[in-house]
Length: 397
Image 1 (tube, rainbow, N blue to C red):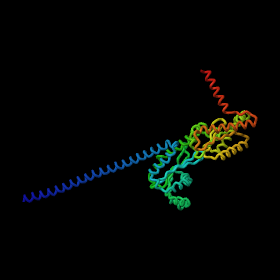
Image 2: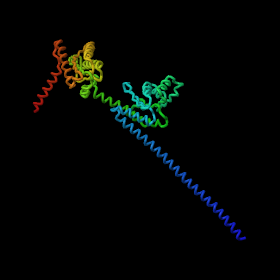
Image 3: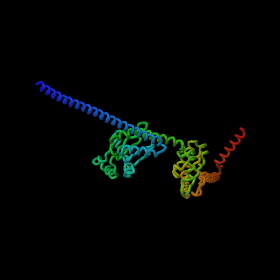
Image 4: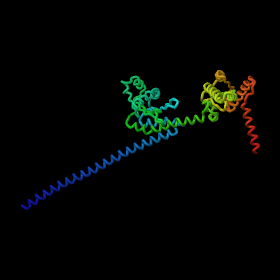
């Protein structure tokens, strides 16, 4: 009897042991699963954090790269297209554009297009910037996203146009000046996904605002250094810097037109410098209208020079005659001389200018001789100055 009880007790103990072992295994398994879960959760959390950090780093690098390009873009406009390329690629877009207006109202549009995209995109946005700007103004928002399909009911004309040009969507943000006024538009079209694109714009919008202000400031400084304040034609400083370029400018021929205003000294004495300034402004305006603002210079008090690449000699004479007629209507007169050279004959552009100057003085002498007056010869004046300077230096020595 005792043996039976002992056997039963042993069996019960073994059963309990198995239960306990099972429980221990379950507990160990649960602990392992819990550890695995904690490890997996921590792994995916770290991975997510790492991805987020990488996204932030990528966004910072993207913004810095765009800023570096735009920092010197007022002197290197090609950098604007390179910056637009970075924006488009970061946004997964086929096309990017930037439009701004100068203070005088002139508009400038820069665009970048993916080589695989249809080139009609350039024309589509370029010809319909008013549509983009009106959407920004009407929305009064920081950014607008226009799905072209939404226009089908409300604006079928624009819908049909954009659809034909294969434009699927357009996203744009305003670019502001220092004062906070709208100065331009930055945008992309045919974006793959709108998610995150706003952040890309926010990261570079200030850089484009700085670019706009740099362009305005740079052009003002450049104008001050290159444009004559009174007559608004290019000044002597610009003339000296551009002179050598004219030796290569003409393919067939090159001409220099030298103009000297007659009677400026007498006008100043008789009617005051305001009247003399008015005469100079009139002559400069007439010269610029016939020979172009890019090729007309005021190089002295009453002296102007214009260059005419590849213009026929008879046409040059015709323009001079037209200028003379315009001056006569206001009671003014100027003497002109032309220096002319076939392209294969030109060796020294300064000799061409000298030839024009000599011919001008010949005409000037004829004019004053006809009036029975002594011409105020600029060459004589310059020679007198040199002689005086030489005498002063001799005294000092």
